[in-house]
Length: 238
Image 1 (cartoon, helix red, strand yellow):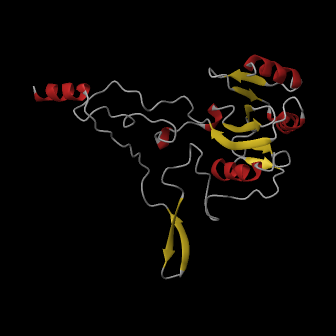
Image 2 (image 1 turned 45 degrees about the vertical axis):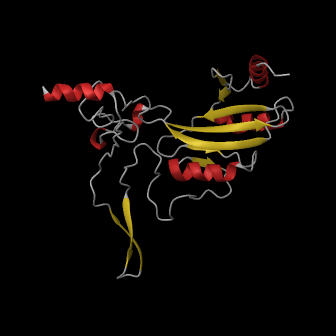
Image 3 (image 1 turned 90 degrees about the vertical axis):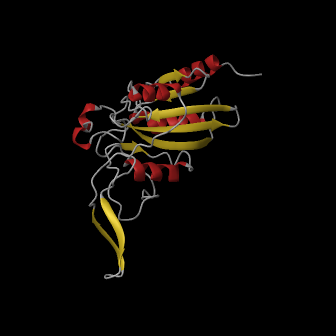
């Protein structure tokens, strides 16, 4: 017998009533809860240990950067003989004009941490998220002691987003090189990077140098047969 999503949401509200959670329900019935970072570890412990919930498995954890959130680079009303030039004249996440990039202070909750939980016992799934404190060095308690599988996920989020997981037993970079500068999944990280890495025949080792190329935006075009394009071409021939 399938459990009603309403009964599960009411259970969550009852068990976590003291922790200021915000509960959201997707159209497909999937539930998400947002919790203040101060209760992050406590709520995680309850979700694992309470027999009515019993989320014994963390299946995924990732960081999120909301800088420039809501900007859309794909809206356009222009048409040419080559088709719609989507993304060429507009700048969205990761593609904004570097001189006019969004400022950090415009976003009260720039970073987020999202994880997905599975209860094998009750056949339930749940999404849990929070917003770490700080824009330059966001900090959130580590969940490695709650779910050991969080270890590498937290290292990945630290490496790519610069989110610090306080209490992590071995918080080191996971995907980038030892000498990598910055965190490449942050929206204000330049697409060209911060340094150039090459092997020097003269020094017989890898060297790091300043980037010499200019920042640019590369937007692929998709060419397909479309009446809008044919109409634009015929108008051009008139």
